[in-house]
Amino acid sequence: MQVEAGSLSEPYPQGRPPRRILRDETLLVLGLSLGASGVAALISFVGSVTKPGGLKDQAATLNASAAPGRPWLDLAWQLFGIASALVPVALVAHFLMREGQGLRTLGFDRTRPWFDLGRGAGVAAVIGSTGIAFYLLARGLGFNLTVVPEALPDVWWKFPVLIMSALQNAILEEVIVVGYLLRRLRQLGWSPGNALMASSVLRGSYHLYQGIGGFIGNMVMGVVFVFLYRRWGRVGPLVVAHSLLDIGAFVGYALLAGKVSWLPTP
Image (cartoon, rainbow, N blue to C red; front, side):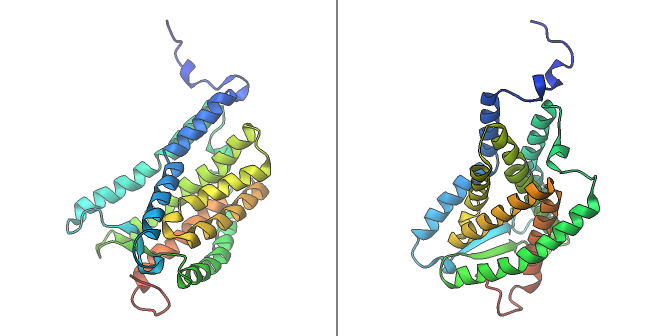
Protein backbone atom coordinates (compact mmCIF):
# COMPACT_ATOMS: atom_id res chain seq x y z
CA MET A 1 0.00 0.00 0.00
CA GLN A 2 1.37 3.38 -0.96
CA VAL A 3 1.07 6.42 1.29
CA GLU A 4 1.04 9.84 -0.31
CA ALA A 5 3.87 12.10 0.73
CA GLY A 6 2.88 14.38 3.58
CA SER A 7 -0.33 12.51 4.42
CA LEU A 8 0.97 11.45 7.85
CA SER A 9 1.31 15.08 8.88
CA GLU A 10 -2.10 16.22 7.69
CA PRO A 11 -4.63 17.22 10.40
CA TYR A 12 -7.48 14.94 11.34
CA PRO A 13 -10.76 15.33 9.48
CA GLN A 14 -12.76 18.22 10.96
CA GLY A 15 -9.78 19.08 13.18
CA ARG A 16 -10.43 16.50 15.94
CA PRO A 17 -9.37 12.86 16.37
CA PRO A 18 -12.00 10.24 17.23
CA ARG A 19 -12.98 9.97 20.89
CA ARG A 20 -11.15 6.66 21.43
CA ILE A 21 -7.91 8.11 20.07
CA LEU A 22 -8.28 11.17 22.31
CA ARG A 23 -8.76 8.97 25.37
CA ASP A 24 -5.85 6.66 24.58
CA GLU A 25 -3.60 9.57 23.65
CA THR A 26 -4.32 11.33 26.95
CA LEU A 27 -3.58 8.21 28.98
CA LEU A 28 -0.33 7.64 27.10
CA VAL A 29 0.84 11.23 27.59
CA LEU A 30 0.11 11.03 31.32
CA GLY A 31 1.65 7.57 31.55
CA LEU A 32 4.86 8.93 30.07
CA SER A 33 4.93 12.03 32.26
CA LEU A 34 3.10 13.30 35.32
CA GLY A 35 0.70 10.40 35.70
CA ALA A 36 3.68 8.11 36.17
CA SER A 37 5.18 10.67 38.55
CA GLY A 38 1.97 10.53 40.58
CA VAL A 39 2.25 6.75 40.98
CA ALA A 40 5.93 7.05 41.92
CA ALA A 41 5.09 9.74 44.48
CA LEU A 42 2.40 7.53 46.01
CA ILE A 43 4.85 4.64 46.39
CA SER A 44 7.39 7.01 47.92
CA PHE A 45 4.77 8.34 50.35
CA VAL A 46 3.82 4.83 51.46
CA GLY A 47 7.48 4.15 52.10
CA SER A 48 7.78 7.32 54.18
CA VAL A 49 4.71 6.76 56.37
CA THR A 50 5.69 3.14 57.06
CA LYS A 51 9.24 4.07 57.99
CA PRO A 52 10.02 4.47 61.71
CA GLY A 53 9.98 8.08 62.83
CA GLY A 54 7.87 11.08 61.83
CA LEU A 55 7.59 12.58 58.38
CA LYS A 56 9.34 15.81 59.34
CA ASP A 57 12.41 13.77 60.37
CA GLN A 58 12.71 12.49 56.79
CA ALA A 59 13.86 14.48 53.78
CA ALA A 60 12.66 14.78 50.18
CA THR A 61 15.45 16.04 47.92
CA LEU A 62 14.47 17.62 44.61
CA ASN A 63 17.70 18.51 42.77
CA ALA A 64 20.45 16.13 43.84
CA SER A 65 23.84 15.33 42.39
CA ALA A 66 23.75 12.55 39.80
CA ALA A 67 27.50 11.89 39.89
CA PRO A 68 29.06 13.05 43.18
CA GLY A 69 32.68 14.12 42.84
CA ARG A 70 32.53 14.16 39.02
CA PRO A 71 31.23 17.65 38.12
CA TRP A 72 31.32 17.35 34.31
CA LEU A 73 29.56 14.00 34.31
CA ASP A 74 27.11 15.40 36.85
CA LEU A 75 26.41 18.35 34.55
CA ALA A 76 25.79 16.00 31.62
CA TRP A 77 23.28 14.01 33.67
CA GLN A 78 21.54 17.17 34.89
CA LEU A 79 21.13 18.53 31.35
CA PHE A 80 20.00 15.16 30.05
CA GLY A 81 17.37 14.94 32.79
CA ILE A 82 16.02 18.40 32.04
CA ALA A 83 15.88 17.80 28.28
CA SER A 84 14.30 14.34 28.50
CA ALA A 85 11.64 15.59 30.94
CA LEU A 86 10.42 17.99 28.26
CA VAL A 87 9.87 15.29 25.63
CA PRO A 88 6.18 14.84 26.67
CA VAL A 89 5.66 18.55 25.96
CA ALA A 90 7.05 18.04 22.46
CA LEU A 91 4.72 15.05 22.11
CA VAL A 92 1.74 17.20 23.11
CA ALA A 93 2.79 19.83 20.57
CA HIS A 94 2.92 17.09 17.92
CA PHE A 95 -0.57 15.84 18.75
CA LEU A 96 -1.96 19.36 18.65
CA MET A 97 -0.29 19.96 15.29
CA ARG A 98 -2.06 16.88 13.96
CA GLU A 99 -5.29 18.69 14.76
CA GLY A 100 -4.12 21.72 12.83
CA GLN A 101 -3.44 23.57 16.07
CA GLY A 102 -0.28 23.80 18.18
CA LEU A 103 0.85 25.00 21.59
CA ARG A 104 -0.46 28.45 20.66
CA THR A 105 -3.99 27.15 21.17
CA LEU A 106 -3.04 26.61 24.85
CA GLY A 107 -1.62 30.12 25.14
CA PHE A 108 2.00 28.95 25.25
CA ASP A 109 3.65 31.28 22.76
CA ARG A 110 5.31 34.69 22.52
CA THR A 111 2.34 36.73 21.35
CA ARG A 112 1.69 38.42 24.73
CA PRO A 113 4.99 38.43 26.64
CA TRP A 114 4.28 41.40 28.91
CA PHE A 115 0.86 40.09 29.83
CA ASP A 116 2.35 36.69 30.70
CA LEU A 117 5.23 38.20 32.68
CA GLY A 118 3.10 40.70 34.59
CA ARG A 119 0.28 38.33 35.52
CA GLY A 120 2.71 35.51 36.26
CA ALA A 121 4.82 37.65 38.60
CA GLY A 122 1.71 38.75 40.47
CA VAL A 123 0.49 35.19 40.92
CA ALA A 124 3.93 34.07 42.09
CA ALA A 125 4.09 36.83 44.70
CA VAL A 126 0.76 35.80 46.23
CA ILE A 127 1.22 32.03 46.09
CA GLY A 128 4.88 32.15 47.13
CA SER A 129 4.30 33.79 50.49
CA THR A 130 1.28 31.66 51.39
CA GLY A 131 2.99 28.52 50.12
CA ILE A 132 6.01 28.94 52.41
CA ALA A 133 3.75 29.55 55.41
CA PHE A 134 1.65 26.47 54.60
CA TYR A 135 4.74 24.28 54.18
CA LEU A 136 6.19 25.37 57.53
CA LEU A 137 2.83 24.75 59.22
CA ALA A 138 2.37 21.32 57.64
CA ARG A 139 5.89 20.27 58.55
CA GLY A 140 5.49 21.56 62.10
CA LEU A 141 2.33 19.49 62.49
CA GLY A 142 4.12 16.40 61.19
CA PHE A 143 2.22 16.16 57.89
CA ASN A 144 5.19 16.90 55.64
CA LEU A 145 8.72 15.73 55.02
CA THR A 146 11.55 18.23 55.18
CA VAL A 147 11.83 19.39 51.58
CA VAL A 148 15.38 19.92 50.33
CA PRO A 149 14.99 21.89 47.08
CA GLU A 150 18.60 21.39 46.05
CA ALA A 151 21.65 19.37 47.04
CA LEU A 152 24.01 20.13 44.18
CA PRO A 153 27.75 20.62 44.62
CA ASP A 154 29.16 24.15 44.74
CA VAL A 155 30.30 24.32 41.12
CA TRP A 156 29.98 27.00 38.45
CA TRP A 157 26.91 25.43 36.79
CA LYS A 158 24.88 25.01 39.98
CA PHE A 159 22.63 28.06 39.67
CA PRO A 160 22.11 27.86 35.88
CA VAL A 161 21.03 24.23 36.29
CA LEU A 162 18.66 25.13 39.13
CA ILE A 163 17.07 27.83 36.97
CA MET A 164 16.75 25.47 34.00
CA SER A 165 15.24 22.82 36.28
CA ALA A 166 12.66 25.34 37.48
CA LEU A 167 11.76 26.29 33.90
CA GLN A 168 11.46 22.63 32.94
CA ASN A 169 9.10 21.91 35.84
CA ALA A 170 6.93 24.89 34.97
CA ILE A 171 6.66 24.12 31.26
CA LEU A 172 5.99 20.42 31.77
CA GLU A 173 3.36 20.84 34.46
CA GLU A 174 1.41 23.81 33.14
CA VAL A 175 1.32 22.70 29.52
CA ILE A 176 0.24 19.15 30.34
CA VAL A 177 -1.73 19.37 33.61
CA VAL A 178 -3.59 22.58 32.76
CA GLY A 179 -3.64 23.39 29.06
CA TYR A 180 -3.49 19.98 27.43
CA LEU A 181 -5.45 17.96 30.00
CA LEU A 182 -8.31 20.45 30.27
CA ARG A 183 -8.58 20.62 26.49
CA ARG A 184 -8.70 16.86 26.13
CA LEU A 185 -11.17 16.35 28.98
CA ARG A 186 -13.45 18.97 27.46
CA GLN A 187 -13.27 17.18 24.10
CA LEU A 188 -14.09 13.91 25.88
CA GLY A 189 -17.24 15.44 27.34
CA TRP A 190 -16.13 16.00 30.94
CA SER A 191 -17.92 18.72 32.88
CA PRO A 192 -15.85 21.79 33.86
CA GLY A 193 -16.08 20.83 37.55
CA ASN A 194 -14.88 17.27 37.02
CA ALA A 195 -12.06 18.44 34.76
CA LEU A 196 -10.94 20.96 37.39
CA MET A 197 -10.92 18.25 40.04
CA ALA A 198 -8.97 15.83 37.83
CA SER A 199 -6.32 18.43 37.00
CA SER A 200 -5.97 19.55 40.62
CA VAL A 201 -5.80 16.04 42.09
CA LEU A 202 -3.22 15.06 39.47
CA ARG A 203 -1.07 18.06 40.44
CA GLY A 204 -1.33 17.13 44.09
CA SER A 205 -0.60 13.44 43.41
CA TYR A 206 2.88 13.87 42.00
CA HIS A 207 3.82 16.05 44.98
CA LEU A 208 2.70 13.40 47.46
CA TYR A 209 6.31 12.32 48.01
CA GLN A 210 6.59 15.51 50.10
CA GLY A 211 3.77 14.39 52.40
CA ILE A 212 0.12 15.29 52.98
CA GLY A 213 1.00 18.98 53.08
CA GLY A 214 2.60 18.81 49.65
CA PHE A 215 -0.45 17.02 48.25
CA ILE A 216 -3.02 19.45 49.68
CA GLY A 217 -1.02 22.60 48.99
CA ASN A 218 -0.41 21.73 45.36
CA MET A 219 -3.99 20.57 44.84
CA VAL A 220 -5.22 23.98 46.04
CA MET A 221 -2.68 25.63 43.76
CA GLY A 222 -4.09 23.51 40.94
CA VAL A 223 -7.59 24.83 41.55
CA VAL A 224 -6.30 28.41 41.41
CA PHE A 225 -4.31 27.76 38.23
CA VAL A 226 -7.27 26.14 36.45
CA PHE A 227 -9.44 29.12 37.38
CA LEU A 228 -6.83 31.56 36.06
CA TYR A 229 -6.33 29.57 32.87
CA ARG A 230 -10.02 29.60 32.13
CA ARG A 231 -10.17 33.31 32.80
CA TRP A 232 -7.11 34.27 30.73
CA GLY A 233 -7.11 31.47 28.15
CA ARG A 234 -3.33 31.17 28.42
CA VAL A 235 -0.87 28.92 30.20
CA GLY A 236 1.87 31.51 29.61
CA PRO A 237 1.27 33.40 32.89
CA LEU A 238 1.10 30.10 34.78
CA VAL A 239 4.45 28.99 33.35
CA VAL A 240 5.95 32.31 34.44
CA ALA A 241 4.44 32.05 37.92
CA HIS A 242 5.55 28.45 38.39
CA SER A 243 9.04 29.25 37.12
CA LEU A 244 9.44 32.12 39.57
CA LEU A 245 8.14 29.99 42.45
CA ASP A 246 10.59 27.18 41.74
CA ILE A 247 13.51 29.52 41.08
CA GLY A 248 12.79 31.19 44.40
CA ALA A 249 12.64 27.82 46.16
CA PHE A 250 15.74 26.31 44.53
CA VAL A 251 18.02 29.32 44.50
CA GLY A 252 16.67 30.68 47.80
CA TYR A 253 17.40 27.40 49.55
CA ALA A 254 20.90 27.27 48.11
CA LEU A 255 21.61 30.76 49.45
CA LEU A 256 19.82 30.55 52.80
CA ALA A 257 20.03 26.95 54.02
CA GLY A 258 21.88 26.83 57.33
CA LYS A 259 22.02 30.62 57.54
CA VAL A 260 18.48 31.42 58.75
CA SER A 261 16.70 29.75 61.63
CA TRP A 262 13.23 29.53 60.06
CA LEU A 263 14.26 27.40 57.06
CA PRO A 264 14.20 23.66 57.95
CA THR A 265 17.13 21.52 56.89
CA PRO A 266 17.73 17.77 57.36
